[in-house]
Amino acid sequence: MSDEDLKHLMNAREALVHKRLACAQTIAAPGDASADSAIRSIVDVQRAIEVIDFAIEELEQAELDDELEAEDEE
Image 1 (cartoon, rainbow, N blue to C red):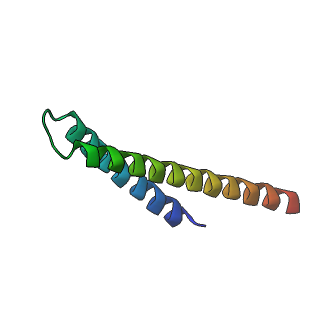
Image 2: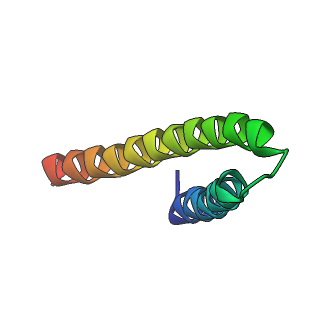
């Protein structure tokens, strides 16, 4: 994966964080009938954020492994 892949993952994560905040605002609004739907949505969004975080960690680890491998070849 490349730096561009990392950029895409970070952009996706940022978009999901904004969506999570919007869901939280819906939940916090008094008397909002869509709060139950927002609760389900915030759980789904949080899961997606965690998946992206895992993908970012994998990408960073792969880059570290590649750097170590390149150093070993020198």
